[in-house]
Image (cartoon, rainbow, N blue to C red; front, side, top):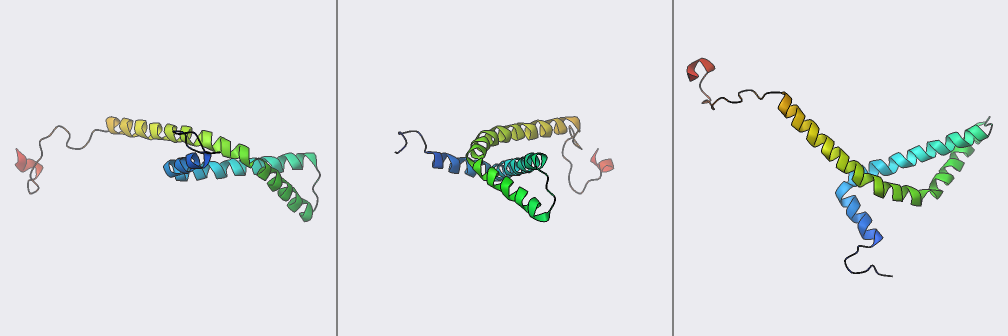
Length: 124
């Protein structure tokens, strides 16, 4: 079913989101993946006694499978988190740059420009 006029399809919205926030989108996506995977590993290990290498690999395999089942939820969370985190980071960078610029006086601020061949003693 095509999207109504003026409304982008889900795929188009994802492409637009990735075009605007590409690296941040990937960081959020893989960060959520790693968090969920480790969370499942811990949950499985807390519920079972793992005593062999095969058991450990089985735990990671089961956790990976469970993590793949959460892919639609992780995608939805990534779509929601990425623009909000990006806006926060832009605001944080802007405020830290402006506060750093205001806190440190620039050398020569308030002085008229001098010729390149003049030393400070020759200028006046």
